[in-house]
Length: 231
Image (cartoon, rainbow, N blue to C red; front, side, top):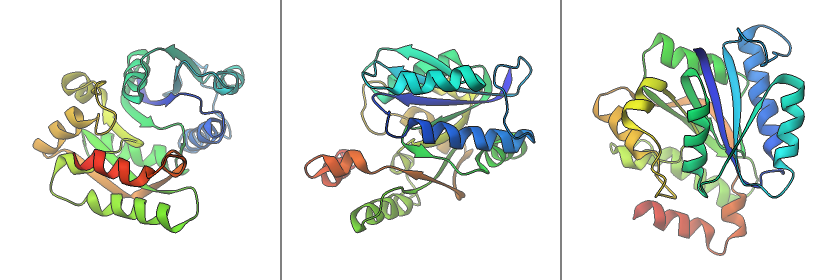
């Protein structure tokens, strides 16, 4: 099996999917010690999978270009939720460690190194990473600052939002998959088990930039998401 599989759920993500994938590829290249890794190579320890849930925009075409260039894999799926797309991507992957990244979340260049360190060296089952806003504005800043503080609460359910999350495959297969009936906190079966057995970590040393656009575009989007989380 490969050391690490990135799984990106996508639905109509043409605005940001290219930037998200380029950031992941840059991190993979840094960890591999080469300028641009070819994911088609049979012995490469990494893979990048986009689980496309029926996109009607240019998402699939953007991914296809990277598939031709470096071997990013496009996995069509139909489920209607991010949880279903993550599960489909995980089923198509082969890594000993799985890293789930939302299609509007840009990981830092040191992401792969830190993910492998946490799982291979420290033996963590599941790790959530710090998130900050890609967009300017006080509402977005307050929102992601709140999430950073909420993840300090001594409750596994408080640590939701799997926009950038990694876990060992053995943990995923034993306690997963993502709960496809949920639109928020769908990773609870995975985070709850890791929390119970003391192998969970919220890693603030790695920060990804994620988008607040869905909440910005919805009426009272921040409040509606907050109330959903509280419930």
